[in-house]
Length: 359
Image 1 (cartoon, helix red, strand yellow):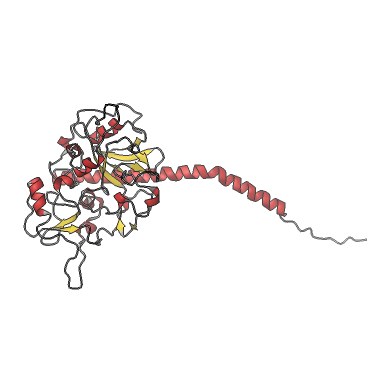
Image 2 (cartoon, helix red, strand yellow):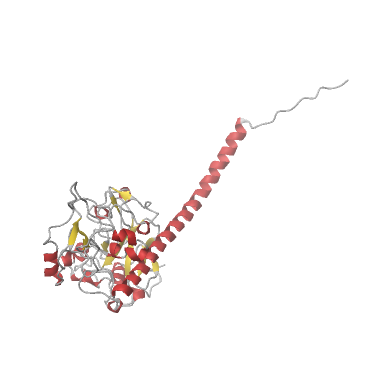
């Protein structure tokens, strides 16, 4: 008697499927922190490489012009100024250039084409719509610095529209931990800023509270703000001016931006990288009681007027490029006087003796 053979159908039961999904969920939960750490490390390294490129560009700029790039601002009475052009429509040299360091170094980060592009907005007849009158800012500039611009020079007015240059992102100016290179609220932003220091040591009241002047260091109404590596048009700053040593003084670092404003809207992140030297491209190294610590990790729960400081999306500290071209991580929680002193090029102190300050 023969028996009929029958095929046995095998497959997952609902219980098996749920078990596999649970195991996969557990595995993803365990792996997610590791993946996030790897991504953060990669972004931090990319950010540091950006600053390395910027630092090299600053060095090459110095080799070419015999001085560091400038951050024209309050000392030069240049509020609202963008790029300055000569009568032929070519960007003028640093002696007269009213756009700040991030514009000035473009030829040294392989952005020569962008450097030569016109930032003018024109009407239907070809008349420029976003430049200052012929006698401004040259009159104020001459009064403040003694530098008289040659005939035919003209300056972009940042408050009369966003021109083609300011709408062009520069990848090196973006930290990937915050946002990809792009245009936000109509302008190409920047994640890095030059340091303007306060008095060393920082002023305090009788109770020991800091009485720093972050606004004054940027407006240059506080003369200590002129002692950064990248400073106003006058005085001329060279390597010889960095008397504390190039390895002891930082030039440019990550600036503070609220995470809710990464896509636009931050007060100090709305003019773009081709501005004259305001909050977009310069920050104060000072500290003031009642404000968050300088530097701080990006956060949303602070007052709107506290946007003069340095900060980062990174977990442990900000990336900063020093005058010797080295990039270090400056840790959050660094002593306020030490941080400010690191930005002051000639206060006579060496502040890198404590390894806890940098990584």
